[in-house]
Image (cartoon, rainbow, N blue to C red; front, side, top):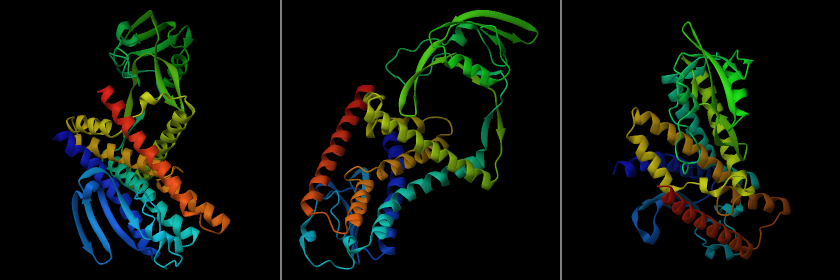
Length: 371
């Protein structure tokens, strides 16, 4: 129950605000909203209420949501009213390109805004931690952290050396170390190699050799191998005012979107294995584990902001069936100054539906294998 409720909490708010963005944008340009749903009402399962011209509902399947507007071929694949020659002024297809793009992008903008607001609140209340750029150890990892969950955990080089918090790294392979950046630059470039380290502890000097471990990490659409020593820098706490918190939150949201985009490109090009993909089961597992940790609410909010930023990016990509796919069609129609044939749109949407369904099934399988 904790896993399920935690999942609902971190998913429902980003989905609701995403669809609310579409709803408000549609109303602002005179597009008729026929349905507004949080969750999917497959087989008619869920709660619904008709108010004026719109049917509002909560679907029994908490896997997303949707806003259905008049005059568009969306994920419902309902083309019945699009064959009529007369275009009504409240239909999506009657609007100009900019009005269409405003409606299609509003959900994405709401997701980015939610991420920024949550991060702003977290940073304003809790401040941030900044690395002290001195070669002093703040803590050590007993085991090697890695992106690859299939690997057996191994003791970290720092643990095997007996390094401790507050030790100061003096030299690596006879190279003088003056900052934490020097340590990172030295270690990351030499995975699986023997190194000699000199460090100080209070008034004592130690020298020993150890083999640098290796780990795989995502970086700009690739999975790269880096050397790992297993040490953590000392940090200092910084309190932020409101404007600084907003600035940091914008930067954080941008970093999430950028890294997610690079990962998406890596999956397409094959530089990142599809075994690293995760879906609905993985999110449920992550939410449930987070809810049982210390400061659970804070961490769930952080996870919600992360998911909201991801949701915004994924939806704006030009994939058939998603907002970005509709936006691409709207731009094409604006350039050629006529609507694409309904059969072409139907084919595009069908391909998108099959692609998304296949991806959904695959990620569930992938998550279950990991679990």
